[in-house]
Length: 86
Image (cartoon, rainbow, N blue to C red):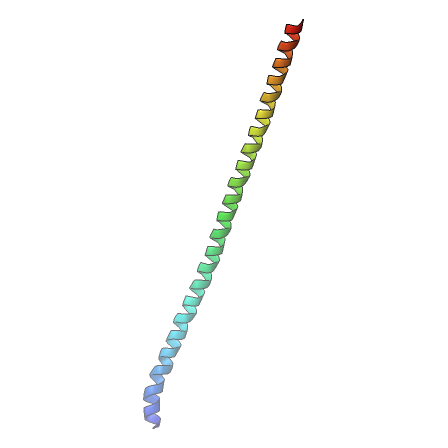
């Protein structure tokens, strides 16, 4: 019985040890890939935030330019009216 158990159990225990090493390696790989995925998501969010900030700045500059143009038009009209009224 002991020889049979040894003949059956030793290869199984050996194979189990090998599989534990494979599983451990795969778990480490999944952990690294998960961390890389998180880093990639952070970079995407940061890139989106930078793009959004640039768009906000562009729109703000457009509003300022429209305001300046509107003021200049108003001043030009006021000057033309006052010149005409003289």
